[in-house]
Length: 345
Picture 1 (cartoon, rainbow, N blue to C red):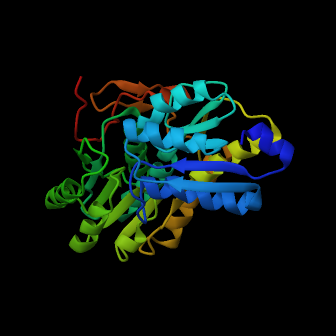
Picture 2: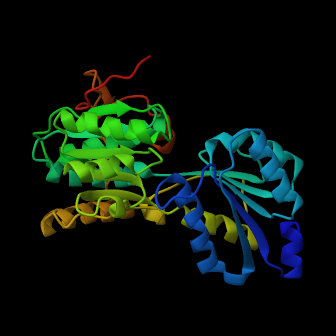
């Protein structure tokens, strides 16, 4: 039924979460779907929550979305950037439907978007890496050189530099893929062979780099999920996303009749990001410093992207005293000083 009809009848709202790949125990799809737990805990029998995974972008996504709406879905949560055009078209055809899309950049009255501030937890994990490295060499296996990924990478390096001024330039391997387990593993091996004793798995949808770090006896840092199970002795830190916090706020707005088709950029302050899986190899003082910095992010007294920050081409990236706003962070097109790679024009 439509959401307005559900409210009038006091019947449960039907919520559907759509994920692009099979659900693993960590990573993107795991976190997209884990938000269901938050919804069920907060709303109980006020919702019926359905999960549909392994929905490839394109015609398969179109069919899946149309089927969900035909079956009475009131709120559709779309867990892939590649669902954007299909989701917008569906929202235009279905004015009673409410859509929440992760990563999108267009809105309609019934189509909201969101991203989370991964870079905040990445800065904190960078601090952990700066503390933990003995070789002074950090390595990063990154998905794509897109603005969001650049922001996460830059914050990580700034965090490491803030506690360790002796770091060598950070080495980066670009996978140019979201999911490629063999290359994820081989890239981690390459970085380790070049002396990296902390490997950051930045958005690959697989724990392969993390498991490789464990096998080779070097530390692993992860994005999105706590990967401790894949590196029981060498997991150093994770940026833990909590997408369900945003889901719940949107569902509540539908119940209250206050839904807006707007963009949300949620982070530590909203409970959508946090540092997790901190290694016991860090000292109590180091752990306390990391958590204190997280508290400063929460109360707004610290922001990773406050200048002065230098570009790795030698120019000024962020002027002294300036703090990047959300739009500037989302359109980031530079790498900070101390990263051993250049962006291609």
